[in-house]
Structure formats: C-alpha cells, structure tokens
Image (cartoon, rainbow, N blue to C red; front, side, top):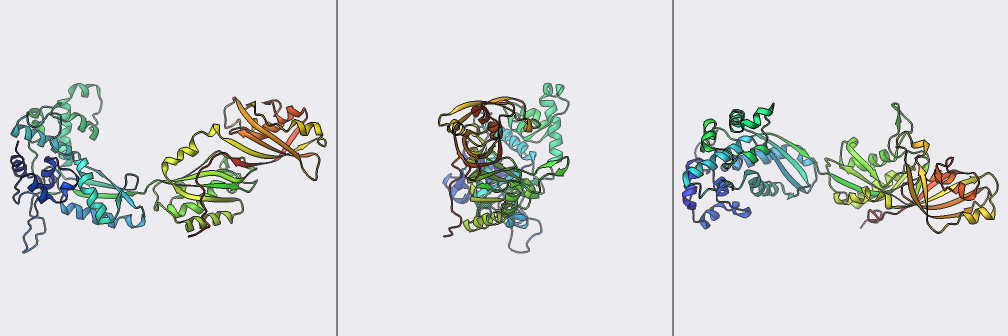
Length: 497
Ligand SMILES: [Zn+2]
C-alpha cells in the first residue's frame, strides 16, 4: 500500500488531514507542521475534506468544509478554539496549578468509526496489507495526547502534568445515540452466547476496545448494522461541558500540642461535641483556605496521636494534610510562616516545618508506625515518699518486653488483644519540691499505652512500673517529648529570603 494511495482513499472517504496523518502513523512533532510531514512522506495532498479553504468573501455561518468522518471534527481548529474558549470561560483562572492534563470522554461512535475504517482499508488494500490485529491508525485517545495536549498547553501557557489540574471535557455528537443503538443490536448478534446468560449487556468503552476488532468480528456482520466506510456527518462534535478537578496536594509539617484539653480530631459523642476544638480543625482552618474552599474535604493524618490530656512537645509530631481538588499547588515560605504564626496564636497548637510535599512521601507517615520509637515524660505520684530502692529500680537502660491487654478505656473502639511491646529505657528523678512525685522518662515502641505501663491497670499490663517497684503508682500528667520520624525535612519558614 503506497502512502499516496492510502491518503487519496482516506480523502475520498472524508477523512481530515490530521486523521490522514494518524493513518500514516505520524508521531509527536509530525503533527505540528503537517505540510512538511506529507512532503517528507512523499504524499501530495489536494485541498480536500477537512482542509480549511473558506473563501474570503462572505464568511459563511456554517463552515463550508465537511466534517471528518473518523474524528468528527475533534482535531479541527474550530474544536480547538471552542475548547480553549470553554476552558477560559470555566473556573480555570481560579486554579494556579502549573501543570494540566486533559481527560476527554469521547463518544463511542468514534471507536465504531475507527473499526469501520479498518474494515474499509482491508477491503481496499487487502488483509495482507492491513492487519487484523494491529490498528491501522494512531488511536484517537493517543492522538489526543499527541495533538490536542500540546496545543492546549501552549495556548494556556501550562505544562503537561498527569498529576496536575485535570480538565474533564465532555463531548457529544448527534449521531451517538443512533449509532450506539445499532451497536447494541450488533452486539447481540455478534456475541449471542454472552448475551444469553447476561441479563443486561453493558457496552463499555473497554469492551469496545477489546472485542471490536477485525479478528473478533466479521465485516459482513458489522455492515448489517453500520456502514463501511463510515459515513459523512453534518455536524461536528459539540463541547457539552468542562469540569475542572484540581490536583491532590499534600502539605506536611510538625505540630506541638500545648493543651491538655484538646482532642486530636473532632470529638463528638451522641451528636454532642465533647471538646470544643481539635488539633485537626485548628490546623485545617489556618492552612486549608489557601489551597481549597471546601475545608471539609481535607484529610488530616499524623504519625500516631496522643490522648486529649497528653501534650506533645519537643520537635513535635509529623502530620500531613491531603487536599483534594486544590486551587493552588504551592505556597511561599512567607505564606507558610503566616500560617504557622496563625496556628501558634491559638495557644493550643503550634506548627512548624510547614511545606508542600510530593504525594509519594505520604508513605513516611503511613508505614512503619509499629517500628518507631516514642519518647515520653510522665509525672507520677507515689503513696509514700520515694526511697532510694525505688529510684534505683526505675533506672533501666536495657530494653525489656511487656504484655499489654487493650486498656479498658479504649475497649469501646479497639478489639481486645494482648500486645507485646518493647520498652527501650526508663529514667527517673524526683520532683524537686515533692518527694512523692517522680518524673519518669520512657522510650517505648510506638503503640504502647504509657498510662497503663505506669499503673499496670490491675495486672492487664505486665510488667509495669508499679509491678517493678512493688508499690502502687499513678500518673498525673504525660507529655510526648519525641517521635522517631525524621520527616518532613526541616525548613525555617521564618527566615524569608
Ligand atoms: Zn479527523
């Protein structure tokens, strides 16, 4: 099959220039200077279907040239203009994402027309030239990436980014309903065995791509329902709707919890709020609005959590906000610093190291939780003044294992298990002004219940601090002073360059 013969045939079938190049299997740049590409491929093109030869005098209301029978105008300049205008008219300006990605939902008739042209080429040039299994064209979906993407990116001044702002484009065509109805009939005839045990045949795009190939369906059968080659149409594809989905942005940082009356997430019991505020709400309220208008859709995650009455000090606990459909994908250090200051002003939580991180880094917060070490400081009280013997028993530098039954206080939300946990070290000193008070520093495996480790909870945790000293001991206050996770990276947002 000579290129020239192919192009002449396609032109006679009303196939546009771009699609002609698709049938020459042109790649990326070759669509940019089409004239050049045809020349290089030794093909002469006449002004034919799809070419734009509107006369200068009396600009017609309807374009004079006919619509391409294979792409239905998808690759025409008119459609591109329509598309760009549609995008600019949408909410586009409110997103600052540097990268964009197009997601076009194409009418199924395009797929049918591709198959129809496939059959037509086989008839024209023989099955030995036009293979049963390998499509004769660059598929439309791929061509959208090769042709439309670069044009739209250039016109909008954006880069292609699969994780960027998604422009969802819904296009329709007037022949779609009629041709899909024919397809349903064809499908019943072509795959009767399947239809028999299926109550309803869902003809999906996936099914079309898989089943509707010359290797699986006969041209003669196809032709009973749909024409070969595809017929001309009177109108082009219409842009039905454009919807934008902003990228998923992850904002990480570390928080310190300064209050002993603050829950981690909103605490609601029987429809009533127990705590007025939560760490999650404070952080989301101050960081979220920069990225999104729908704060309720932001997900807050952290590397573990502490109880309402436990503070978290030291470097703080790593956290991340997952913000879907974000309007902005970045923030300056100055903006980050302002957010940090706003959170600090609440006096309940303090955040730092605030930064946008790549999505892949979320694994840091989601995995390895059990292996991490946690550093605690507990203020404990004895019934009698501390003795030297007690103090010595509570200096433990070698790690030891404990068995911990799920504490009664969390049984309503956690299953009953006995969990082994490792305590890496215990260091104790006496509180300066009160010989009954001890300050105990514990390094433990993540997931250890520290309050129960101290008092033993009637033997549900063994050994415990209480069992080690052989005396009752209670915990008055607990702080997390360190979390063994070196993430996210240190950034000093206060230092504006
Ligand atoms: Zn076309």
